[in-house]
Every structure is written in C-alpha cells, then in structure tokens.
Amino acid sequence: MRSSRSLFHTVAFSALLAAASFATSAAHAADKITIMVGGYEKQIYLPAKLAESLGYFKDEGLDVELLNEAAGVDAENQLLAGAVQGVVGFYDHCVDLQAKGKFVESIVQFSQAPGEVEMVSSKYPDIKSPADFKGKTLGVTGLGSSTNFLTLFMASKAGLKPGDVVTVPVGAGGTFIAAMQQDQIQAGMTTEPTISRMIKTGEASVLVDMRTVESTRQALGGTYPAASLYMEASWVDAHKEEAQKLANAFVKTLRYINTHSAAEIADKMPKDFYVGDKDGYIKALDDGKGMFTPDGVMPEDGPKTVLAVLSEFSKNVKGKQIDLSKTYTTEFVKNVK
Image (cartoon, rainbow, N blue to C red; front, side, top):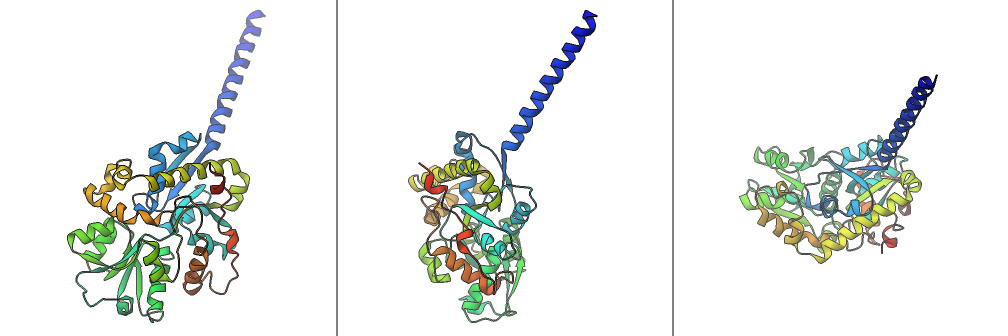
C-alpha cells in the first residue's frame, strides 16, 4: 500500500514539474517578439541589426528575433498575417494600410529621409532627369512598395503621365545589379551598399539622391520619414510595457549612431554586410548617417509629405480620409530616459 502511495506521489510530483516546465516554456514563448526587417543588410534599416549587436534588446529583458525579407511590402503582409509582431520598414505603410481599414503605427521613427537613390545605367547617358523616364523600364523593390510610389511620384512631378513608365520588381543588392547589367531596367531605386557598389564599378550613376533631408526636400517637396519600427495599434495597446522596452532599445541605438563614427558603427555589423568592401561601406554610412533621427521622434512635417505622395499613386489612399495622428505615436520614444 505504501508502495502504491509512494508511486502515486512520485507520479503526481513529476506531473507538477512537467506542468510547471510547460508553463515556463509557454511564458518564454509568449515573451518572444519577432520583427521582420525589409532587408536588414540595407543601411537604411541598420538600427535593427545594430540594436541586436549592441545587446540593447537583452539589456531591456527582451527576446527579439529579427527575420529578413527583401521587400517591405512582403514584410507588411507578414505583420497582417500575424506571423510577426513588428516590421522595420517604411512609415508610408502605416498610411497605406489605414486606407484599407488596418491601423498600424510607427512607434520609433528611425529616419527622416528615405535613404534611397534613383540610379541610371551608364548605358543610358540620355537620362538626365526624371522627365527622361518616358518609355523606360524602372526598377523598384516590389510593386506596391515605397520605392514604387516614390518612383511614380518623381515621374509625375516631372510631367509624365501614368503609363509613360513601367516599374518592375527587382529587389535589392545582387538582383538589382543583375537587372541593370542585363538591361532589364534602365534606371532604378535602391539603397546603400548597392549604390556604392554600382558607382565603384561605373555601371550606374546617381540621378536623384534622397539620402539627406535637404536633397529629399528638393526631390519630394518636404521631409519624408521612412525607416521605422511599425506595429499593429491593437498589439501596442495590449503590450505597452514591451513597446516601451523596444523604444528604449531603438532610441539608445539611434543615440549611438548619432555619437559614433561610421567606422565604429561598421565594426558592430556582420562582416558580410560589407560585400567585400568595408571601406566603401564605411564611406557610404558616413555620407548617409544624417538620414537617421537622433531620438526616434517623427518629424513634424513628414507625415503630410508621405500622404501627398501616396494620395497621388496609391489606389488605396487616393480620395480617402486619413487620420495621420493614428499612423504614428511619440508616446514611447518621449518616455526614454
């Protein structure tokens, strides 16, 4: 009898241990935050990998997993499907999605300029301005992407009509370079380090530069907030503590960028991001560091510029009433000590 009771107590205790272990594992899984980055090797999204490298997520007690996705529009789809909790991508997705009835907000604004450049193949010296895009095929990261909207906006601003240009999705990095080499595109919009790689080989030159606030204002008519951490508003409302910790980590990262040299920042990045040219990577970062905000706060005039661009070319946004105050929040970045 004692043996039976002893066996019963042993089994019961084992079951309790198993249940406790399962509960701990479940809690740990629930605490994990997955963030999709629209190409984390791109310098415009550098704060994501840098925050991880500096240990700032762990300092906040966060278990953050960064996933890579070449095009921002695909990262957005992963968020809406519930596969990830956040996206490091362009703020304009927050505006575009509201028009579809989806409330997504930027909680940390990484940049105040797109960090994008319109490059022209060296085979086409006749393309001297966006007005010369007529009849040409232009590369963008994806259809419905930020680069697509910006490309069409520049063409329209230059007096071209819908149908005068064709945009095709070619991604970034190696796929963008190959598309230009093979004459699939005559011009296209891309970021660092792809820009420097093509300039170095002489295969392309810069036509429109949007790597600084000043040049962006010239190209688009205003400040264009771009790279950000955006999340569904319902998730943020239900996870304010986690949202604050994410803001803490990213604002610290932006402060690090603002107070350290390009060479010091590059040393914290994965070596394969240099694509075999660390000096070129550092120079590109040094030239483009000014795109990043020092504090994660949304530029006051930025959302209106983004809405103006999307209202002209996004079928979702055109003619819709958009409440810009619901596309971003400064609640968390302003609480960072």
